[in-house]
Length: 480
Image 1 (cartoon, rainbow, N blue to C red):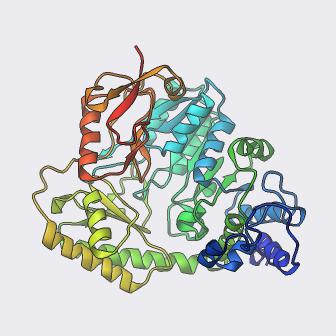
Image 2: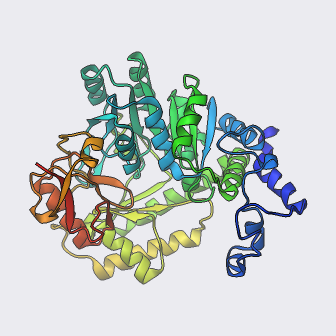
Image 3: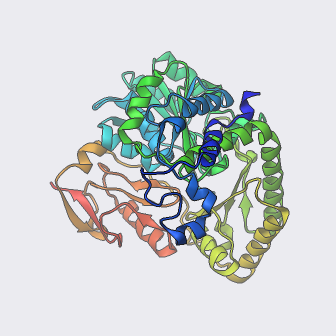
């Protein structure tokens, strides 16, 4: 019955009724100080955009309504404890890494991690030991983590403190999480899961196993991606072997002291909605996703992939809510299809890479939107398709790591044209966003293949970022 409660939301409703006179921040004073903003966002929104105060608790040291809301979330997700994060899942991933690894200590991770994980290495000084994922060249995607590769890496690095796993990947690929936990715990290593795209795993038994159910020690979960909360709101789940009081201290190193109650209340209400209605919501998403896959695959030229990829190793399982579609056979990159859908058909999908597009489907979608997407893809194939031989066959390049990310990032650097940087050691990132997986990270050697890949991404219209040079023409490299 307690899961029907929403403590932060209820406290904010009570606060609104009390008609408090505010001589605190924020300066818009319930919206009166900025009429245009109030008209845009609504008076109800501005009136609950408030500062921390005793009746509303404090996220950095919760003792009442936020504490209660986090306890309800921990129960709902099967965790020992839970932290609300308002700096995005980036902050949750960084808190995981920085809480288990000090400077000079090793952490095992796949190289196709989100930039937030490598940023955590820059901040903490931890040393990455990369397990390079397999690559499906037909689809042009990196896969999950093979158990054989993980066992080899752990045996070579028994002093590593933890292993970090992406589960699921952006494309829906899942690793054998239960087995990874079993092996890591045998060697007294913590298991951290970047579960940014897996909120829904906790509320439907016909989906891949969730991190907490698999026995992981911590999981960073993007509630805003598939859980229904506001953008930038996230949670960090902790298992029973974790000192949650220490985790809170680490979170507070980077989390704001001015937490948004809009984000906090959205986490509170999203958790309540998932507990009460999650099964129904997710089953509808699964039905819509499967219908969309079936219809797209009938078009020819596209391949909306799913569980047929499962090999019980690097593709141990697949998230069937993901509508991942390979576009190579129509001769267009995913980025090109992404742009045409938006510019010509008014359809905004999640992202496009060099070979694929991803459409995120939620309970807010209807049959008519799916039909509109399918029809647009048919038209794009009819109008724009061309020879496919020039399409790049993968979106991940195994790196040569020369120095740690921290050493390279803070080293003496000089700027050189990217096209002339072959053989140099990168001092900064280059990535396509989304999904935010670095093509090149600090400390890695720049090869001709990487240079060609960056140039190809630019030509296809990918949004590249990470370098000081906003035009992505030059890169900072370590001085020799």
